[in-house]
Length: 168
Image (cartoon, rainbow, N blue to C red; front, side, top):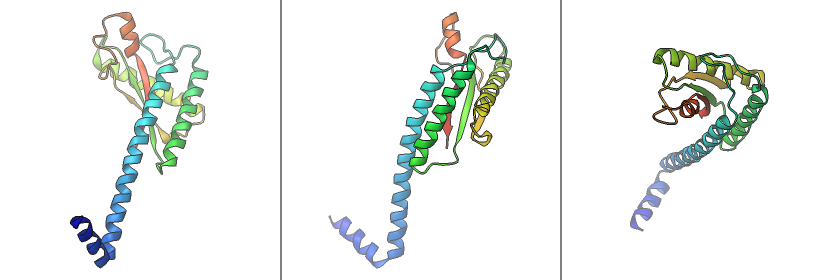
């Protein structure tokens, strides 16, 4: 109680200090809300990108048929994410498409292949109307596997993927 009274007296004596502290408190609350919404949006984007995976030809960045509708769903997920972020004042965000491979083969080749695949998904999103300045592509190779070890065809298939996240 004494601390609160002392703080109130200090703030009354120095309005500029009070405004500064209030601004800092508002900024901290905004960052907390933004971080919560960012985590929520990333969880949703990750789920949508895993649900709507476009398939590629083996060891290639050539899409197999059937990606058009999946890319449209991903575009819609990004639009919903932008709306949620805007509600807490977060605008001008970037969405990262990260490409991933299984652990087979040469790591340098896998990183390059995952980059090319991420670029293909980025281009699909741009074709669907997502602004170019909002989407970046990153190749991660086999550095971030979903399953370890990927010693079966099914496990390897789970690690060959792309993911979409918001980056603030």
